[in-house]
Amino acid sequence: MSQSGPEVPTSGRIFVYDGHCDFCTTSAVRLRKMLPADVAVEPSQELDIEDLGLSLDDVARASWWIDREAGVRLEGSEGIAAALQTAGGAPGIAGRFMASAPLRGLSRSVYRQVAKNRHRLPGSTNSCCGD
Image 1 (cartoon, rainbow, N blue to C red):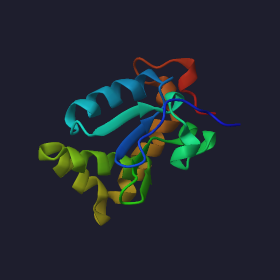
Image 2 (image 1 turned 60 degrees about the vertical axis):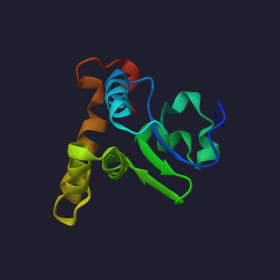
Image 3 (image 1 turned 90 degrees about the vertical axis):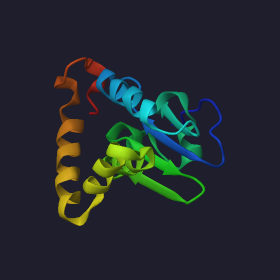
């Protein structure tokens, strides 16, 4: 099953998140404020995800950082770390720590637990259940 929406730029960077999840949306709004203007932050439901090389299962499971010019697609905590690094400043430092070898495994575990339990977090809805 294909999901289509507005055209995605053929170049550039985009952070993709679950727009049906209020926790995810609130987090994405905060991230958008940190990122340079040329970085798109879009809910998966408003995109042609197949054009990004993603499936419905991919976007139900995790958020994604895609840098089309660099040919990079990063899932979950790795994508968040890349987005934070792109933001620079204090968020960039946090992103570098998240992506560092000593903390990468912990970052992945924390992300998986948050994603698994996002329906229990403040502001969540039943559509936050990625099951």
